[in-house]
Length: 348
View (cartoon, rainbow, N blue to C red):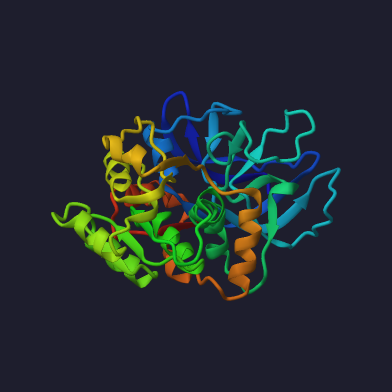
């Protein structure tokens, strides 16, 4: 086992290809993982199309992929946790850089490195992981479902539970019901939000939102859109609006239907400016805008426990399994919404 296949993105040329590369060797505090499943995320698409640039890239060529699960294959020196070879794990989607004095993976970290963007990720047969980023998973949790927890599920989970702090009976709107937004709906349902209003231009996405627990699914272009939101919330407006699309027009619309003290939570990412055209009523109703990025360190382990306890079934989130060698095709399918995917899974 000297070489392996890996989906490599060349930052200088902007080219992506599945290539044969040496199998990495774990250093101090590191573990080599045999990858069993890796999710394809819209962030991966944005990296490959150039709209998302690495902030802290550790190399000029990066193995893509930040949603990864697998089995511990080889132990590096100086480990502390005692996880044995063969342990089933999922990997956190990022890690602290470790350069801050006394760094204990504090939150929020101003220099959080993202797997598959800043350092080598898991679109590969094997991947190196720092031992503190590994979360053991039970035998009952399939690798494909475990792989998507670190981003597709933990990002909206942290947004709902921590950044927003949604309580039971509070009203929630979710704009964009794709890979992240679909799970935002499910988590909002899990914590007791009511009503949950999903917003998406695609009929299939709106149907999915209802299946995932939304009380109402609306087309953002509907002429009576604002009236229907007001009617569903008994005239109060939304307590929380989650932008899972990262689209300026979405943010403007979402802010406009917030109620007194309502908050717009920016979950989707975009390099474009934030624009809110609402005037005095934004101040008068004491509305807020809160930024959000990714999951938190505790999010993944909490979600693993929730799935193991049967509170969250992620099987409906897996759209298809695709061989690693066809990673470029998977990116094409997600970018063009072919089959309206929630999560496509690469299998080495």
